[in-house]
Amino acid sequence: MMSTAPGVKFGLDAFSGGPIELWPTSSIDEVDVVIRAVYRQVLGNPHIMESERLVNAESQLRERTITVREFVRAVGKSDFYRARYFESCAPYRFVELNFKHFLGRAPFDQAELSEHIRICVEQGYDAEIDSYIDSDDYQANFGDDTVPFYRGASTLIGQKQVSYNRTLSLLRGLAEVDSANKSSNLVQAVATNSTCKIVPPMSGGRLGGYADATEKTFKIVVAGATSGSRRRRTTTEYIVPGDRMTPQIQRINRTSGKIVSITEIS
Image (cartoon, rainbow, N blue to C red; front, side):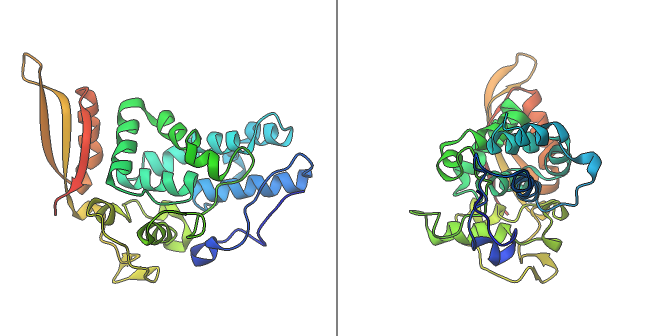
C-alpha cells in the first residue's frame, strides 16, 4: 500500500496532508502516483512533455531496481532541472530552490547558503545535487522511499519561527511554477538574518513582496585567488551587482579561488 495526501498541494495547503511513500506492495498505479509527485516536487510544478520524461529512470523505479531517493537524484541531475534552475537562475535562486525541492525547507542561515554556493562552484553541479540527497537531513525526513515534501512547523522541530516563514515564502510563485522566477526570494532575509513576512503571492508588483536580488549589491570574499604575474595567493573582496553574480562566480572559479562568504551590502 501507499500513504498519500488527497492530492499534491501548494501554498499554505502544502503543509497539510501526509507524505507520499512507496511500499514493497505498491501497485503499478501507485508507483505512477509517486513518479508524478517526484516530478511536481523536484521540478517545481512544471508542465512536462512526454519527450522530457526520464523513461529509463521511471522504468527502473517500476521494476524496483532503484529507490524513490535515487529517482529523485535522477530528476535533480536531469537536463530539464539543470536548464531551468542552474543555467537560467541566479546562483542564490538555484541554491534556495535546491533546498525547497530536495529538503522541503528553506536554508536556515547564511552559512548554510554559502556552503552550498561553494560546493557548486568548487565541486560542480552533480556534487551540489548529491549534497542534499546524501545528507543526514534528507535521510532522517524522507529515507529511501518517501517523496520529499514541504516541511511545516511540525517537521522543523527545534528550529525558530523564521525557518517556517522562509520555507513558506518559497512556496509563493507565479502560477506556483518555480521556473517563473529567476531571482532569489530569500537573499535579503538570510543575509541579514531577518524574518520573512507571510504575504499574498503578489505584492507591490514583486513576487511575494521581496525585492529582486538583481537590484541589490553583494560582497564576495574569496580566499586563495591568484593575483598578478607571480600568481601570489591573496584574500580578495569583490563588490558585485546582483545581476552580475553568475559571471563573477564563474571568473572566481577559473582562478581556483575559494568563496568564503557572500553577503548583501545594499
